[in-house]
Length: 480
Image (cartoon, rainbow, N blue to C red):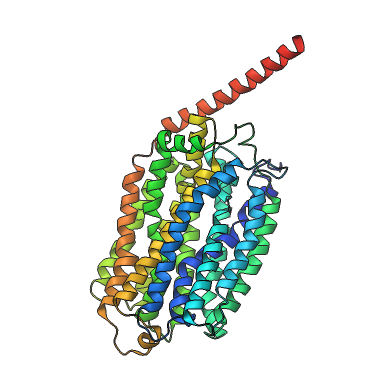
């Protein structure tokens, strides 16, 4: 059997598959565990109903304001950075991966004896530093440089997604492991046990990946080029808006589902049901990957994204309607519905990611500059905004019902508003988000195959012309 060539060679595929594990686990912890940790186990504002939830939700909102400032700046810095012997984006990953882990581990190892104000200040500092470092993880720009072929990109993204999600399957055990070590300090121990091995694996992966040459020969990126994206790159705006809306299907579900499972299925069984929740949702995401790859063999990324978002809305709507009659206490019904929703969400990842790469290709088509860092940082900002809104929406429900973990865990009856509010956040709004994303993606300029092929033909023609001009200049120099 002939060996596959770059970028589908073994080293590149293995490196791409493993390099994002620590980022995936970090995102999962921040989205699905941080809010629960701060409200229930960090010893923050104990005995004051709603205070810890309000403080945590406010912190996440402040983080998004900070993102609005630093994300475009850092994206621009990455685009302006010189290309080293290792590439332009790879050095950022080598530094940011371990540093983000150190900050996140510190966030889950807060000194419990600190007073509330000092502890809250420390939480803000660690979270904002972590959030800034997380911006300097240009996985998408690096992947975009490897190949312009949507099929090749799909083949590279498949293992990348599956391995990251397998890592997320392990996250199903994060809460049980933390509780096994005890609520006082257990989350800190769990953060070390989960994140350190993931970080080492990610570093090994990124060292195996050779950055592509897609941005070689491009002129220096300037501030006016950022403004040109706004004026001329319609696929960017359509994709960004679709991603803003579609991303809420996962972040709203993930941010509030632990609370729903904890109280709908019983506090005493939470360690087990939290693990089952994690397995059901992550397994659904994993199985969605081959489904999306099969879809992309028949339709364009834009068309595939539209199809899977329509499919995403169905299980969410079913769960929302069931919840209107009261909390869903049957674990088979609840976890089956969540699995199907996660399956559809997982199928949206690769089409959505390839649409993002096409946005970068289109920018080079229109302006001659790919600007992966700037475009990717904006997409990263969207993802972090979604995570914050998901946590803030859950926090708003908890504040409204006067949530106090100790009181609610011991209460014989719980406010109906708790399940009504959580049902709206984790079932109803994601259904609307999926339908909204499907509608927006209808207007994606590269949704039709003819438009997509026309763009790539123009890019190849421009490359051929540039090569011809270079050859003529060289010939002229020799003649002279």
